[in-house]
Amino acid sequence: MNCNRRVLRSLILLAIVQLAQQYCYYMKLLSFSSWDTPTYKLEMKLHERNNSMSSVTTVLEDVPVPQWHLIFIQNPSKRRNGMRSDTVRTIYNSTIKTCDFWKYIRRVNAWNNAAKLIISGGGSNMSLDCPLKRGIYTMNVIQVPPDTSILKFMYQPNAIYTVIGTVYSLNPKNGSRKAMCHYEVNCTIIKHC
Image (tube, rainbow, N blue to C red; front, side, top):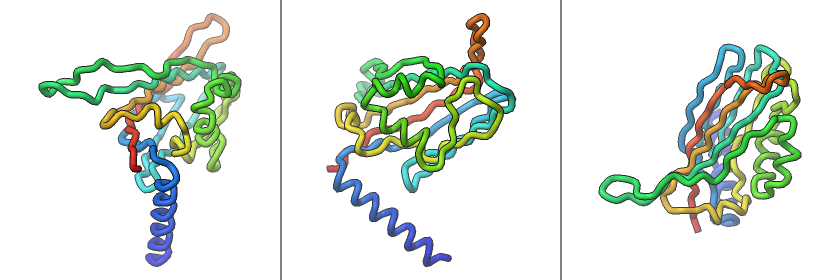
């Protein structure tokens, strides 16, 4: 058993070294937090060994029209007198119905591959249907691939990036919405060549 673990660790390290030689930038996940409601449970787990996260979403009541609100911000990296000197920069801010997600994300070329990996890859079964039916949904590999070209342009030494997400239940009759869960993920971009 220990021998198998050592071999697996060696293979993982070899794969990381090969990726590091091929790509100069990668996104390192640092921390996350979340809150949810009794009818929509979100559990997230950070996997430091392969620099990814996974999530399990338990939907206990049908959600008529699920809606995602995503904000991606860059926190300033410069400090003067112990205080951050720059203001927070919003890189992305959008709200979209999950059933329209693929139609929209195809236009945002920089994130299309990452979205495919997160939502469809690695045995994930996340549903983008409207309505979202009761069930348990997983995303097994939540990470930004190192071949995502935008990482090079986003790189700022010591900058912390934050993804703030809220899942809403949109009422199709009157347009009102109710927050189902909220999460924040902090990360940084590392340059290693």
